[in-house]
Amino acid sequence: MGKSGSGKTSMRSIIFSNYIAKDTRRLGATIDVEHSNVKFLGNLVLNLWDCGGQEAFMENYFASQKDRIFKNVEVLIYVFDVESRDWASDLHYYQSCLDAIRANSRDARIFCLIHKMDLLPEQQRDEVFKGRIRELRQRSEPLTIEGFRTSIWDETLYAAWSQIVHCLIPNIRVLESHLNYFCRSCDADEVVLFERTTFLVIANAATIDHQDLHRFEKISNIIKQFNLGCR
Image (cartoon, helix red, strand yellow):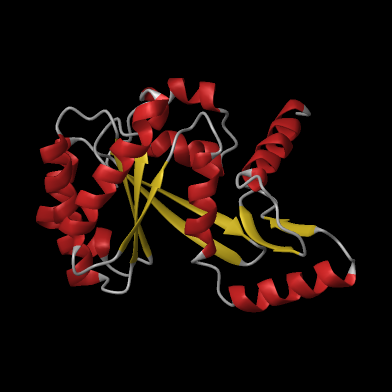
């Protein structure tokens, strides 16, 4: 969910349809709701709903489609354009989403993405992000949210989506335990498990500390670019 132009469709296309960042410029606005089913880890299916953010659509979601849009939701991902000129309106629609989620899917996880961070001067990014997330947490109470800063031009998008998808995988602790056993049996420094279609990071196990916190996303991006170049 998110207002029109916030970047929802672009990030979905990069993660799940193998777009590269520059190709998202030719994507049009989402009309109403676009559904896609993504096979994940063999037999897991992610049912993604990309909801158009034009004002008429947003009002319709809350007025007459609450049961359809917000029922049986596992994860709500709300995307905010960091350079939005109408933050008050963004918060209004976000609050409406929270009300609908509380009424129809009380156990849903909520993620807020402060998107297009690349448009801000680097020295302002930390302060702006912390301020936005602080306000969103206050407005979301008593619900708990997790926040990420994202951009389609760097590894932050993959980092955020990897953590989002991680929470949807059943028996993830068992998978992590097996991966840890495999890592130690091989005497490896680290083992990383990627999903083969999206190259999102599913889990990792390490026997040594690593300094680069974004190493997974960098590897993922390298592999994805290589695969696209081989087509």
